[in-house]
Length: 391
Image 1 (spheres, rainbow, N blue to C red):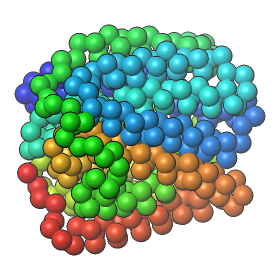
Image 2: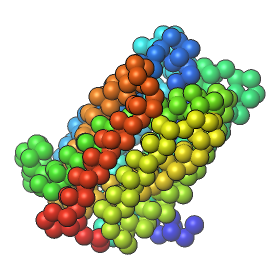
Image 3: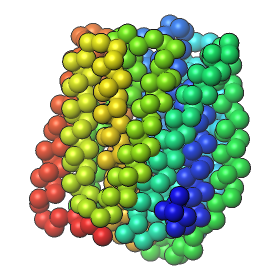
Image 4: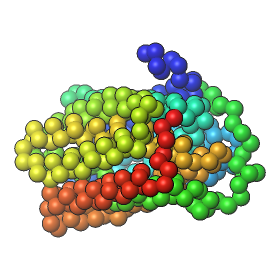
């Protein structure tokens, strides 16, 4: 793979760390809606779990991002975050009531919150702006590759007669391998900690254009509830529980190819334009999920929906690198993660409530409406002032 060989060792090591971590995570996640239901949890509780977990993670992503700007070494934060997640995630195998799942999922996301912003700073600092899309595309592609393998491992173990709880406990193995992998990361030479250059740890210290961009991302996030609801929708449409991990795997196969291809492409074309296309794909996908009536519809729409991640994940992070001043990368990535995460609670609760009290179709249509509003705002943002340039 010639492209990956040209990337710095730091990016490659962090990519494979994400790969191993997601194997363990995705051995569990596709099975959680069914597991929570077996414990007596309602659809609204699924929204609460994912909303609280993601919001907790995002607050810590800001804290760790601010801290990353003040310390010279980012690796200890990254290692701590991966360690917490790897050791807490398998505890799901001992959950007895729904609130146990909430607690374990939250601890898992605490680890993610600690590691994500410092990790993104390490990746961003290891490459020039012209290669940022490719670097983040590589990391996200390996992350999704782990999400392909994880459900396959879960399916294999279930087919061998393992219980859900035993599959959850087995997730400790890829977690330990991920910890070993992140220990091999070599930190790039970075400037002096930003604490000596910038004193005000507030959002107002970020450029106005970046703050407007984060605000638009927040509007989009209000309609972007957990993908657990889409798995629930697939079950409603007739996809058998035993096939949910395979559906999740196929979904991530699309995400692997899309993030890798579109991440590199974003270094050569308008990143804002790619983001607009990605959000349009999201709107269409949610409307198709709302209108679906057959099991095969779920398989088809999940394939389209996977393109959304490839068009947006690397691009959003590469745009942060372009918009954030030098020495404030950690803060910028922290606020980027905070905005999407804080909106996860109202997004999850709203979707869960509408899903349960009205209909799944209406809940999905509201998600598409929020994304449509954000899409219009993004187009105005792109036209106003100086258009964000491509490298």
